[in-house]
Length: 232
Image (cartoon, rainbow, N blue to C red):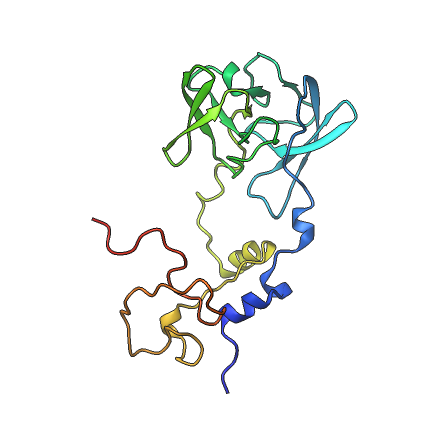
């Protein structure tokens, strides 16, 4: 008798395939309409994030942001000012061209949506009136509202992927912290009863586009692909 395939087990949503709620107890977002000076109380480690977090106090409010490279505890940062300094939260229209920024707002006042991964940053590319064009890490340009805010600098943890993972045990603990499925078995390597692509009969199957309403056991292959075929 065959067992449930991995896609079915993931679809059930057991604790094996879900991240612990404790991992996301820190919400990365700064409050809207802040002007003044804030203090970095503590640098915090979070298993759910790829960068260290900073616990910041502004008046009676406490919020968490990704720490920038070089941040120290007890440091003062400016909110809503004109001074361009690492860690300051400023509007995009007040930043000079070629400034490195992260934790960028999608709409004015939403607290930061883009660029939160360790070691990443975007660059202010050019300005046209109230619109500011940002060069993202993917080398694509994005048009933003000049009133959106961002943090000056680049996120700490840039060397995270430089050193290779030498032992399987270390990889196990990295994946376990985020409840990622690892090790992942290739679909072609398993038995035919355990996966639609299983057995060695079809080593090079054609790309399969799964139907959008297909059950978890059959929803494998290309899921809602933007394009198919070989890139030219």
